[in-house]
Image (tube, rainbow, N blue to C red; front, side, top):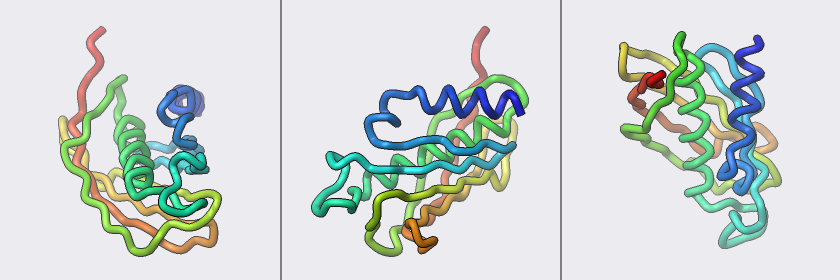
Length: 137
């Protein structure tokens, strides 16, 4: 429980996430929930409609934290591949993403994720592959 709280605090200190309006909300082993409240600069071509690249970053971020949360030792990861399907335009003031590690080996994790609008409508689905890197201490 303490580690999860520390992970959330660490993630939410990230300046990129802050600039984009991304917050890590909950961390369980291999599963992370995040929220995007996009800044107006992230919405284009319409207000309250974040650019697809912003949603991609939300999904990639959430998936990476899911991978990190599934590791016993301190580690980080890098994205090998992320495949995302956008099902409809993102409209609203906030969006949620849930990512879950579905399989892993010693060095590779396979993750799935879904982004919802404020009403629970699916806006994007994705699957990603991440390389696990151990911290050198």
